[in-house]
Image (cartoon, rainbow, N blue to C red; front, side, top):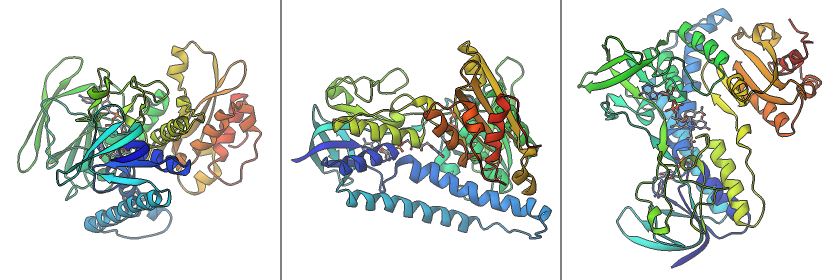
Length: 465
Ligand code: FAD
Ligand code: NAI
């Protein structure tokens, strides 16, 4: 029987980072992954392929419109096969990269489905049905999540697709209906809208992007609507009937009223994700998932001695970089060091046009806490780099404590703000005041000057116009 200090079940951002960190710290580590490649949801069917399509479709869209403003006249022609091919090649290179890092850090990738078979034991069933038992001083569950289903709308990944299906549609839909105005719906909806589809987004709530600062969400919705995306908010989908040619969706207003139908050639169901623990053998060590399927943990420790859990399968934002933080902290604790994750400082990004990014608390959360705060805001229309690039949509908003000036949250909507939100994450990690950022010299002309100007705005001394 193979003996390990740590056996990690799942090879996604949680699992592979845990395995690599374990190897770096000299622990004998194995990672059990049943998918044919490493990297989990993120590398195979999540972050990376979606960003590949977002990037390519953004350029296609720009070539169709914005380029002309810059004096570049082209008539782009879509080659969807090539667009999908380059996506697949990038994904393959990235997953191979994890294999390389496993070898470099002496991590064993044990291929197959892992199941906890009692304290300190993981049983792995390979594709051929053969089983082996791994002996583990510590077991880390990093089995991730899967798309949530909706009764009456069954995903066939032909006409009614989940995010995985939407990453590989064989053609540009004439009409794509997206159920759920969350991150997946808006990112993948944007991809297909840019490539020529009519996109209608049906959302249960009366707003898009729950969790996002409400003022930002309003600006975001206005922008997406201007681009041609249609929204049906406060609407409940009651059923979906797929045929060879398309789908008929039935829906009704959440507040009550007449039912209606929508015809689409494809439907994307994107109403959230749920933890994945199928056949994991949690019962053999007495661990019970909560009502929503998450594994309860205290600093990654489950209720069973020597069994830990990280990433999407535990509570917290379902994000790759959060899974990575969990992984490092968990393994460092297993190695007798100190591990810490500040979940308030996990940034969120929506990679659309404009991009949306935030870190810390939004206005609604601060109000709910009864916290007194000041607001500094700066629009990209007043940022010189954004102006010369004709990318003036959006703004930066900084929320700071009314008494101490400590930054409590930063909310960005605009061009490439995904690359800028990290500055606020750093500042907030060091518990900076808005004045600290306001007094840091930023290069000119850059969009990042908007961060400084918004911070200056907290005390009312914004300068650029
Ligand atoms: P996962 O990545 O889900 O990995 C779990 C792995 O465990 C899987 O490979 C699975 O095959 C394996 N596994 C499960 N059970 C077993 C078992 N019993 N035995 C062996 N193997 C098992 N996050 C971001 O931060 N940024 C983004 O831009 C982003 N984009 C996304 C786009 C899409 C379309 C989707 C669906 C998700 C996106 N996410 C993004 C979320 C991100 O993918 C997840 O938060 C992240 O992958 C979670 O990592 P994880 O390691 O916890 O789980
Ligand atoms: P989500 O939680 O972001 O959004 C789901 C949306 O569906 C919500 O607006 C919700 O109100 C709505 N909804 C729920 N039930 C509904 C129903 N019956 N009818 C209509 N609308 C309904 O979930 P999503 O978009 O599926 O993404 C899952 C997770 O994947 C995200 O929460 C995020 O953690 C991760 N992700 C992250 C990305 C990023 O970081 N850029 C990109 C894509 C996914």
